[in-house]
Image (cartoon, rainbow, N blue to C red; front, side, top):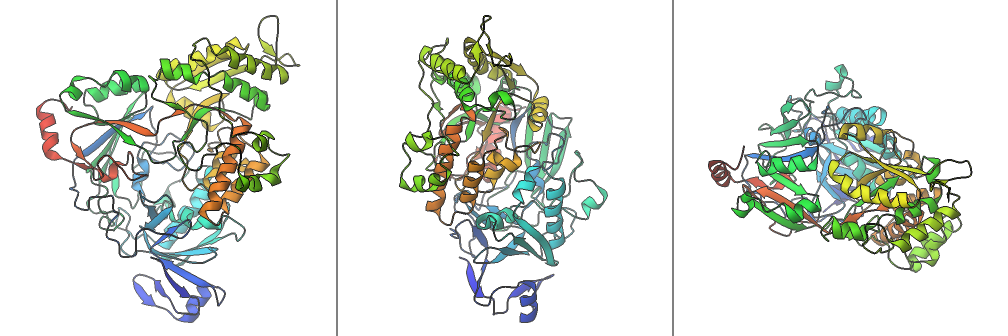
Length: 628
């Protein structure tokens, strides 16, 4: 558990080893009020609670004796041309964050806690206006040089200045980062900012070598193997088709409690494919050995190939304890034709999920309606007194239906490919009210004579079977609707520049939302190329609700405010919600073991770092010719 001391006591300071400094030096470095308590801890959490004590040996969900060895391989979509995942230029390779460690790292059985990695301790006042991280003297980059406070300061500054635009939003409430000595770095935060989680934001900062980038431009995309302090280094690259990483035998942090039972594979490999179907066929042939299946048609009809029947490939459905993810067709609100929420709602009503689920998805999905689907943060029914108290100051600035009606849920349609007539009539009425009326040629135009057109950007051939029936229904409404299919690289570039009408997007939402909401829904990120605010939402009430979430002082306050935000976002009709399933379908060649059986910790699904390789099983598969 965290330990406490008052500022009038002397403290240990780290500088090339442990040494005691005088009270005067301590006071000069960390000015605090005499009565203010200083917390020293091996970890940090949003609301102060930590599951694991300072003397923990490993996380509960790992196998501390897991053997090391073997290869874990899976697939990735599209292509890549960069090993630099933190900048706007280029398409970074899957897994390319493995080069880097952060000051602290999370656990898979707590939604909002972090424990020491590069830093062995953090100290901060109760008000969280600053934090000092104490680096481990043994922390080294892969070239053997020490990780220092100057490297941490450089990492913060270079991400703020040259990183993806979203970092400008992330660091909005950071006032400074300074190296107090070689092994102590201090972050100071805006007292009016998001103090609850800023320390955790700093703790999650990837740390780069300042010396390495003295001769390189951080902002430039490159496939040069970077210098990092992480558990893996580059193994091999094949021109945008394959990337693999090898576990470092000399990794400095392999025996830390947060790493015990992790990083068990000698090699991590990603094979790239242009579409889902070709990737599936390659999996059947043993080109890679682990696959999470996202296509319902394949899962329902194709997982009966010989390797499964013969027991060489295992097929499983594992529960997912996380929020289901926010997936839908998102509008580009930067375009004038989508400014009216009636237009957006009408377009949403043309999507017949019930027909798609029955005819295309084999009935395995449920319609998404919330931005926090499958979680306790989802708004439901009429707002209760706690939510109303939060929402009341925004009356007149948010839709009145937020106060008077149940949280918005898409209408249930009859499962007809030609569209649900009732839904299409209601959609047509909304378009009429918005000033988009039907002309003699059957097309909808506004008062300026402009045709209402909607183009869905799509980078997957397999997704066309979903988009095309939706487009048919939009055309029945008199909308000039179409789908434009491009390759993954083109789609990524167009999304970065907001060059689309509608596009499918999925956000993995947190159990403890906070600063990241500024990047997804905040006005300040709407015009930053490459930001997560794909929809371009600019709404002052939403901005203020996000700040209330960030400033929440308790879990109860946070939950009620997130529900209020969910209610408002749904009433704004900024998306066409798609579908979800509270479980994940996986298939893998039977050569792996995992520590948690059929009940993974809430945040562990798909986390390969705690699985391990079984060489005897792999040898049998090779002998049978099941693997390439």
